[in-house]
Length: 342
Ligand code: MRU
Image 1: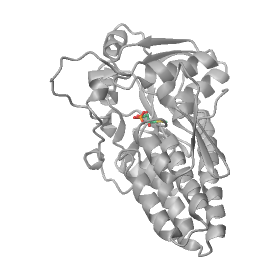
Image 2 (image 1 turned 180 degrees about the horizontal axis):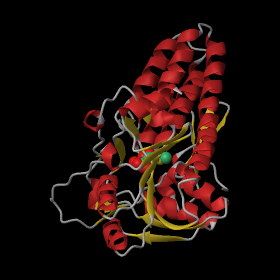
Image 3 (image 1 turned 30 degrees about the vertical axis):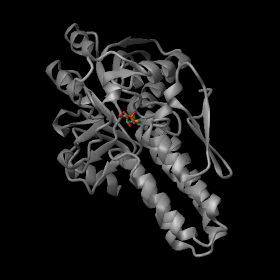
C-alpha cells in the first residue's frame, strides 16, 4: 500500500480525505477535536476501526492544543462530547474514546497526561494493524484455493489503520498464493465499493470486477460467487451484525443460494453491552446523498428520501465471525462471550 489512511505527527492528525478518492490524494491536517469530529461526520475518514483511531487521535490533538490552558479539563470534556456525537453506529468510536478516557482520568499533570494520551492513540492505531494482520491469517483458512469472493462497501486499509478486515482477509489469502478474484459491489449511496475497494484492489493487482448492488443476486444464482466476506460496524452480544446498508440483503441472498457469508472484524467491534441488533443505533444520513452525488442531483425534485446508513444482519445468517482472537462458526451469545473472555 502506498498511502496512509491516517498518520499522526506531534499535535497534528493527517487524514487521507476519502471523499476525494480515487481521483485525488489529499491529506487533511487536523489540529483540534472539533476538526476531527467534522472529518468523521462528513466521511473524510470512515470505516469502523479507522473512525476509532481518528477519534483517539482527536483526543490526543486536543490535549496537545490545550495542555497549557487553565480550562484544560473542560476543553477535554467538550472534545469527548463532540467526538462521541460524530457518528452513532460504529462501536469502535466509543471503544477508543473509553480507552482515552481511562488515561485522562488517571493522571493529574496536564503535560504528562497529554503525552500519555498521544501514546494511547498511537497504541490503538498499532493494535488495529496487528489485529487486522492476525484476522487475515485466521480468515485465510476459510478461503478456498481458487474462488470468487463478493465483498461490500470498503472494509480495507482505508477503513482501518491498515491492511483491512474483510479486504484484509482477501489480501492475506491472495498473498498466500490463492487464486482469488473479487466482486466489489459499488455500495450506494456513498460508493465506497466503486471508489475505495476497487481502488485498493487495483493497487494490489488482485483481479476484481465492479457490479451495481442490485446485480449480486443474479451472479449468485448463476453460480459465480463462492463466498461473501464483509466487515462490521458493531456486532451485538448475540452475534447480530450492523454493517453498511445492503449487507442484510446480501446475507439473505447468500443463504438462499447456499453461499457462505463471513464477517471479519476485530473484537473492538463486538459490543457486549448491546444485547442484539434491535438495540444498535442506526445512523440516518442526509437525503442529499441519495438524491445525487458530488453536487449532481438526479432525483425528481421534492421526492422524499430515506437514507439509513447501516442495516442489521441477524446472526442466524452469519456463517462465521473472523476476529484476531480466532474464528467463530455460526456465532451466538455463548460463543461470543467465550471469545471475548479468551
Ligand atoms: O459509512 P462507512 O463507510 O463508515 O461504513 C463502513 C462499513 O460499513 C464497513 O463495512 C465497516 O465499517 C467495516 S470497516 C473495516
